[in-house]
Amino acid sequence: MVQTLANQPRFHASALPETEVEGATRLLPPYKLLLLNDDYHGMDFVIETLVKVMRWPASKATEVMLAAHHEGQALLMIGPLEIVELRHEQIRSVSEGKKGPLNCVIEKA
Image 1: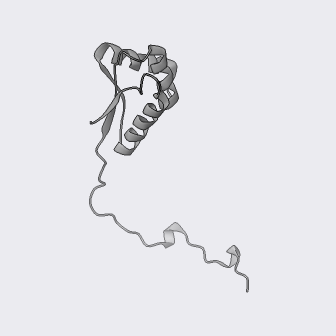
Image 2 (image 1 turned 90 degrees about the vertical axis):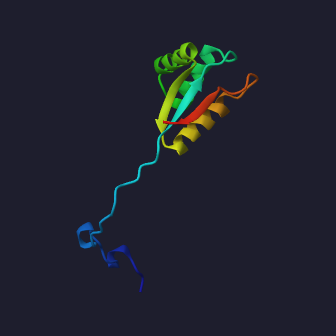
Image 3 (image 1 turned 120 degrees about the vertical axis):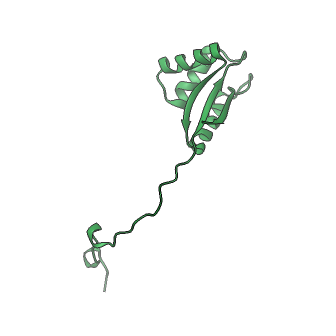
């Protein structure tokens, strides 16, 4: 006999036993990705890289780039380590060139 979906038993959420989760949900510690100022990359290059990787409008990328330029560093993002590391690697690979990649650091938030 051929089994079809019509022959299969159907389960509804209300028919399943309820389970309780004991304890609170454990949150992952947040990390920061910081863009550091350097004397090697042009402002336009930094803006283009941030627009491409962070998917920001040029106005936001310009604001962050200027903060790094004037203050020495600027916050790019706060999030779980895996996502912060991914963005860090993307920035480094997109900006790799004769002058080297943009300089970013990861710190605990």
